[in-house]
Image (cartoon, rainbow, N blue to C red; front, side, top):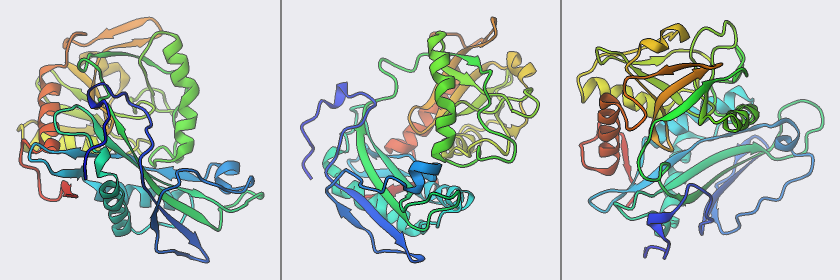
Length: 341
């Protein structure tokens, strides 16, 4: 498919409507066959479950053009499995994982003209999501659901390189113990909106959320997991039942151990020890790794030795290796890359 005439090099990280999206409906206890459609608009009842009680879950992944010219996605099977876990937690029917991957493939193929060319710095963002679609006025799960996948080309998360950011320790809680912090539900992100607007108003780029039970342990930000590098180059990531299991983080930990030969550890990370780390980063689909240069806790500054000018050396190696795998420079572990065309 011929590429669309878009300004790939100057594209921002926003929504651009593409030609096709995938839709499947759940009714009378089963999913229909699903189809690609043209209409980007959704018509639902004013009393739909998603509007009344926020019964919705979603995923995010990307399609890339590799150096060899192939269009690929990165570990979509893990997105399918995570959405299944999210759906179960909100009493929603699971969309079959094999059909999830097939829907992603169909939508990317149908919008291949919007997959940015190799070397442009842009990618095709893929958003699968599901919501309660029939009317629900009593507090209960919906009976009917819609699963959809749309795509949008996006520019690089960072313009002009990944400069370290400054984050603050939030006074707000992101997730409750035994709550929904471990799933990708829309309601979790709604919870974070006031906190991130407050952080931005105070001059910070992001929040560091502590555990809500004791407020002594590092959890995550509103939309990314933390990774820390010790002074002896061990890669550490927080463990918690209220942290979203990031596919990027899981991949980074594998790359650290099996490609770079580094020691890795997933464990409780107490805020008191943050000052002792050499490097810090936020990891997620959008930016892969966002380096953190400074953490501010009510005026007290923790400055990482890696500084505010560039990624730390270990973080940079992790970033380069993972993006090299995604773009086809470096051989991927089996099953990580799904070739679409």
